[in-house]
Structures are given as C-alpha cells and as structure tokens.
Image 1 (tube, rainbow, N blue to C red):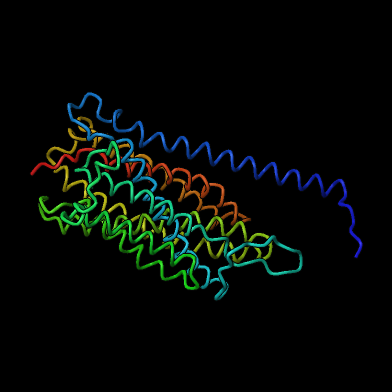
Image 2: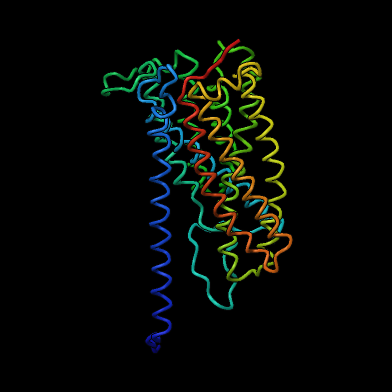
Length: 353
C-alpha cells in the first residue's frame, strides 16, 4: 500500500478547518463565560434600590439552576429532533461516535449525542442545590453543615433528591442501548421543578405547577430542539442534500410556532398570578422579579423576531438553508433566556393576594 503525501491545497484546507474549529470553540467559551455573568451578577443588580432582601448565595444558586435548565434542554431537544428527523429520512441509528464524511458514502444521520454529558452536569448541579436545601436553604460552609437525612423530612428536600436521582437515571439511559428511555427521568425533573416552584403555602399551587410544567416542557423542546436541529443540519449538509435539511428545519419551525404560543400563554398567566393586573405596572419597575421579567420578555421578543426571519428565509430564499444564520443567532439569545429564567428562580417572588 502506497501512502501519498497530501498536496499543498489539501494541507491548507485542513489548516483552515482546524482554525475555523478553534475559532468556534473560543467563541463558545466566550459566550458561556458571558452567560454565566447573568446569574452571578444578576441578583445584586436586580435588587438594587428595591428594598428587597436577596437570599444568601443567590448568584451561585442562579448559576446552578442555569446549568440544570441547560442540562434538561439538551437531551429533551435531542429526543425531539431525532423523532422529527425520522419522518424526513426514515429510522436511523444513533452512533456513539460520528465518523468523518467520506465522498461516496452515506454520512451518519444523527450527530454525536451530548445527553450523557448533560446528565452529568445536571446531576452535579442538582446535587449542589440539594446540599443547599439540606442546610435550610443556606449555602453550606462545610460538609458538617449538610443534613442529608433532613432532605427526606421536607417536601422541598424530597423534590431535590428526586431531581438528583432523575439525572442519574437519565445518564444511565443515555449510554444504554435504548437512549429514548431518557424521556421518563427527564419528565420527572420537569415535574419536580414545577412542584418546587409552587410550594403548598401558595394560593392554588397546583394551578401554578401545571402552568410551570407546560412552560418548562415547551421551553426545553424549543431551546434544545433548535440546537440539535442545527447540529443535525450541519452533519447532513455533506451527503443528504439541502432538501432533507430544509424539510427538517421546516418541521421544527412549524412545531416551534406552537411551542412559542404555549410559552407565551403560560408565561403571561404565571406573571398575572404573581403580579395581579392592578399592581403589575408598578412591580415591573420596583421589584427585582419584575425587572428581570421585563428583561426576559425583551429577549423572547428578539428570539421571536429571529425565528420569524429564519422562517421567511426558509420559505422564500433561493437556498432555504440560509435560514440557519438567524437560527444560530436565535440559539445564542435563547441561551441568555435560559440564564435569565434561572435568575428569576433565585429572586424573591412578589406574591400579593
């Protein structure tokens, strides 16, 4: 077998690909670092001048919840988009490793799964949050402050343990031969979060939990689904042609429109429950929760505009896959929305009945 030395043009191409990959990695790291500043610095900024007292370690708790929400979105989005992709090109395997595309061969139908990594991140974040609950919702100064047995004695502690165990089981499912079974532990995380957000002391807590359940489910499908759809399109571009990619993106766009409507409706209802119509305008500017809620609404408006731009390109552009450009920007802004949503959970809720 004779080995041929690559030509200068081929070597230059490889160098350009490596540089592009390094540039993307640096850009992702910068965006992650900037996104982490929102939950870390957000509580003190939002509480400034409101007269409200923030919980100890609110910035760290908000950061942990950002990680937890992101870890939930990734596997939910993968399961969702993989199901859409099957309707575009039929059933396909989910390889553990994505080999490079080779001319004349069929590339893999699904990118490498990130679900196992997301489960590890979610497990660690849920475990850290459970340790906070075990110390009476205070940041523990050492292992001796953590009362693990006390978690079983309270509703909040039981829900925290439920999330820890659910992420552990989801990770085991992700590396098993049937990764689709992740849907059950992931559903348990969503249910636990919905119940945790509305304690029994709240007025009609089951109504609030139901709204949060729908809101969080739709948000996870939207955020994680778009990320995985773009990863799938990038993989398909080498061998399945623009038609399959446009079909997949079109399917996602149709479902995303319904998801956005559900997210908007449940978000408005949840806000009205916590800030009645007679006080909502005042609380939007005088409470930390209201200020962050305004920031979230503005970000969602930007996301909706980017989604509309992507949908217009998908329908009218000569190359439908040019819709990927605004879709990538949409993913970035959605990441900020996730961070702001996590920040909301760490702020005092202005419930006034």
